Image (cartoon, rainbow, N blue to C red; front, top):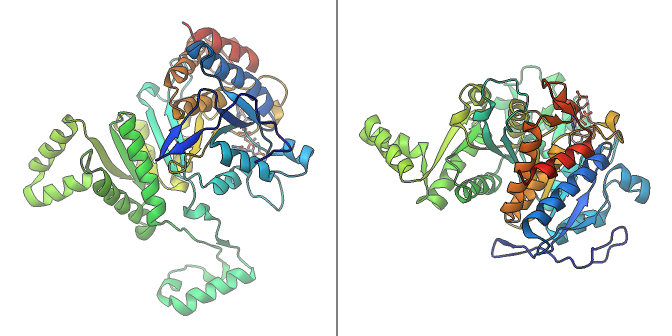
Amino acid sequence: MTYSNSVVPEGGEKITILNGKLQVPNHPILPFIEGDGTGPDIWRASVRVLDAAVEKTYGGTRSLKWMEVFAGQKAFDQFNAWLPEETVEAFSEFLVGIKGPLTTPIGGGIRSLNVALRKALDLYVCQRPVRWFEGVPSPVKSPEDVDMVVFRENTEDIYAGIEFEHGTEKNKSFKKLLQDNFPDDYAKIRFPDSSGFGLKPVSVEGTRRLVRAAIQWSLDNQRKSVTLVHKGNIMKYTEGAFRNWGYELAHEEFADEVYTWQQWEDTKAAKGEAAANKEQGDALKSGKLLIKDVIADIVFQQTITRAKEFDVLATMNLNGDYLSDALAAQVGGIGIGPGGNINYETGHAVFEATHGTAPKYADKDVVNPSSVVLSGEMMLRYLGWDEAADMILHGVGGAIEAKTVTYDFHRLMEGATKLKTSEFGDAIIQHMDD
Ligand code: NAP
């Protein structure tokens, strides 16, 4: 593929995938979108941090070969397209990349550039780690108990975007279809003549690939449990099915490595609760991963009151959206929350800030770059460059512990020193070697 908007960096090599395993060269080409609004400030600081971590760790034997690609306002201004085809092509060809926040174009065309990119590359996992750094202001008593990773399904559920607006012809046709073909269901609608409708597709394949990714990642990273989060008591054939299909997948593909609450239920029914408890205890002692489930409403309470009981959480799109922001609040909010959109089958991955463009702070060099820095940390770990990723965690942790922080943390911390975005990047780099 030849690029007209972007330059493929010299000396860079392509990341590939072989038998489901990423093949990462020493100088991988990584497409990046700096982002709109505060994006350029954040990117300038972040790229220095990422390069420094790699340089300090590998002393030049490895490096990141950045390739700028365009989306959002910058792309629209320069190329008259919000998401130029070649940007999608670059992420497709080079497999792994990173992006800052993008302005959502208002009115018509693309609903959201993030959604468009996820769709184009079928990035079915939205992975959001939620952990606390010592010293980060938090509204909860024991933020140190929060160390969770959300695996949010990224391609279906109500986010499929199938909605019929009240008063439109489509809405009328849909209502008639219900009335004619499913009269019992139609009768359940409280105000049929003034309702909008939305569809919630949740599939076997969509569920299985998400749960598979969550379990495999948990096994690879020595995590303790995967909790399937669902509202299956109300939405039996979508959310309830997600739970059932999740357990099925765990039994079929990971029988030797996991113990499930379903197994506990079966043993309890056959041999009593004591036998079930003993079976579970033995399985966990032998190092098996626990697969359990929880109803989506109670999970919001329990992840606050009993945070230690949660580790990896696998859930559908809408639950995951709410849950990841709520969890992020416990450990410092979205200014610091990283994320990755990943297809674990093709290897495609786009790591990204979880906050927006915060336009009122654009070009002021004041916002917190941690969300992109830590997304870069996730990206390095995804590439298997764990030592460089650890160096970043150490640097961020050190800068915060020294109370040298950007305005958002400064206003909540006593005795802290307020740094600019760029200075916070410097502080992270300084603390890498502590
Ligand atoms: P936002 O950009 O996330 O900003 C909301 C508030 O969050 C800011 O005013 C600021 O709060 C805080 N904040 C955000 N980023 C921060 C950072 N790096 N450091 C410190 N604080 C930070 O949300 P928005 O204003 O609703 O959306 C603005 C634009 O972003 C819209 O066009 C929206 O569509 C887009 N957006 C893009 C993405 C994406 O690309 N992933 C995601 C969400 C929204 P304080 O002022 O209280 O300090």
